[in-house]
Image (tube, rainbow over all chains, first blue to last red):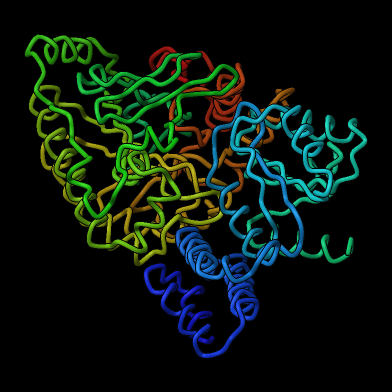
Length: 208
Length: 346
């Protein structure tokens, strides 16, 4: 199990599948292996927040966990890999950047959420529609990377609020500040992917 | 009073500039035939394929073209067999096209450097070919293949450098390659060095050895951790340092070896409802916090003269000129007379 954790933290993509299988063969349950990979990703998130690791390394760790989860999926049954519920996310209309969104999604998924990716350049109404289509989703993430799309972020948050759907709205991205998040009525601002995953877990725990 | 070009030279070489260099005033941009022959989308156009086979779209309501990385459009589908997918375009163009470009440069304004604009760089090209997620992952997981790919792109850039120097004799290269986010570089310092230090030393070294006076490298990001490598590469001016780099400290530490052209983040001034006061505060705030006429050029971090919202760039220029007027006694008109007319590129 220690090996699985270390491989995820170090992003050793090519070695994770046999290591996961080895842990299972040694008697660990699929849930236990999944949990240890989650612990590894928590460590990765913290290291990213303190600049100990870099974006490429965080990405490699997240992809390594995804590949490891692939081995576990047939054993976990429905929902085993997503015990914290659904998390919808997209980049707002007029913005085609996806690296920040993808990193957040990978970290959120590694934390135990089922991620529904709306993609980039997403109109406000699509965020609302996705929430209507997934009434059990309690957290939504809205991303923007350009100052030109801050207005679209504002419109998206307003549209979600006006829909009356009970959901926690998380926002982030390079031009977003805590003050702007508060001004547009978002519930949560986080500065990076690691802290976004941490916050999403806190919210899910509070809602449980 | 120095021309904008003379003033920038003094600033970068640690001489005696007589005022702050004002953003891009000392640079005139030119595009070589290699740019003319690689299609790029106009606003509203979708799925335009460039000379490398990379698809770009510029949807309405977005500020520029962007590579399309749906599975069917990704050029490099298998990094382990990258040679099957990646084919650099030819750099052989008719003599008359080089002559036409040279004529435009010869007719350029002597008060500014004549820069050839080159983009994307080695790192950007790799993620245009692969998608950003896949490229970053492959730099970690497939080091041998990525090293080969970077070498292949470097060889292309070397051939480009040879023809650009042979036909055009620019005195400046303005080269884009974004290496980080606002908070950090994409790759660990050592990894970045392993992949990019020697290739860029080759490219920028060639330009320097063949008559190019100044290399300006654009990366609007955090890169403070790789400034020593940037110096070793032969970069004279880093355009685009964001505030997160602590530019005043960088200028103190490295300003005699590399010039920092930026420190005015777009997000401070370039948004709906921006005001003159926002621009004044950003321009003066940067100048006064750095407080150095050498090794520093106050500039919007964007990689070319202009701004996402109309008017912001021009207002920043005006504020810097007013500051120069107050501190050094040259009127705004006198300063304008020493530089080419402002051109908004983006």
